[in-house]
Amino acid sequence: MSRSDTMKDALAQAYADQVAEISLHDGAAGTDGSNEIVTITRAAVSWPDPPTAGVIVSAPGSFDVPDGTVLVEIGLWNGTGDFLDSFVNNITFVGETTYGVTLRYTQDGA
Image (cartoon, rainbow, N blue to C red; front, top):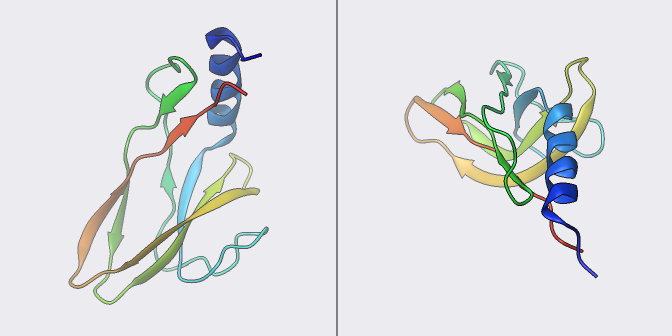
């Protein structure tokens, strides 16, 4: 048995409705958002289009990243400052840059 696209879309939208900010972390975020790089401001997240077939994509969040910054994970936060989730993204930045992050959530059919 598999989920209908209607159900996958509803679940993807529910996920997106929770995620309001993205943060950068120089170590594992754990279950509480540890190791956030507090000198880099969190980026707001917006979801300009509704999900299609269980897939929803955010608009890019943008960060001004100093030279030598080590990024280990990206954190997700709700609108009231509660940590939700994280994912690994190991990068060492050589040179100051603007770093863009686009989130893509896919609700599978199981």
